[in-house]
Image (tube, rainbow, N blue to C red; front, side, top):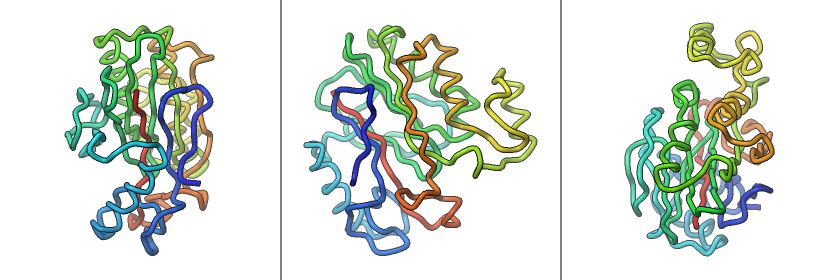
Length: 234
């Protein structure tokens, strides 16, 4: 299975797995961006994955991700930042991940979408809130925005420094977002969505850990691994 879909988003979207591609190990097999793999393999994998969603690569807006809270107005091709928003039909927006969380956003009433790459730095800087605010600038309304939190490293497998935990405390996150030095990025991004006015019933979380065999994990694979995408299009 190449894509896992969210229950609460009814437009073209998906969170990719590592299955159904052409790359050899350690990128086996649907690597959509791990830089040590060959460009030919990555291109072939993107075509296989996107064909399943009826999306062409020249429709895709994607990112040079820098672990920021920068949100870009989507246009086809590559931009620099960690989230994308658009209200234009036919532009697929994609974020890459391999332990960080891909988060998708959809206002089905006003037809505005977003996608964010949420590692700990982006999360503590509240990139989810920035994405929601940029969507509102395009006509979205918070009561209509559906949020889908994809796969990422689980709290049990994500020990961080006490300094990182202190940053989350300083930023106003509740202690439900960590246990000792185990950081719960899924819960932290849900907290930001709720704080931003998203309705609890409009938030879906996959609750899958990237250390599972179905996914790529930067930590598990000591940095030599592939990348997955979270993607959405009107």
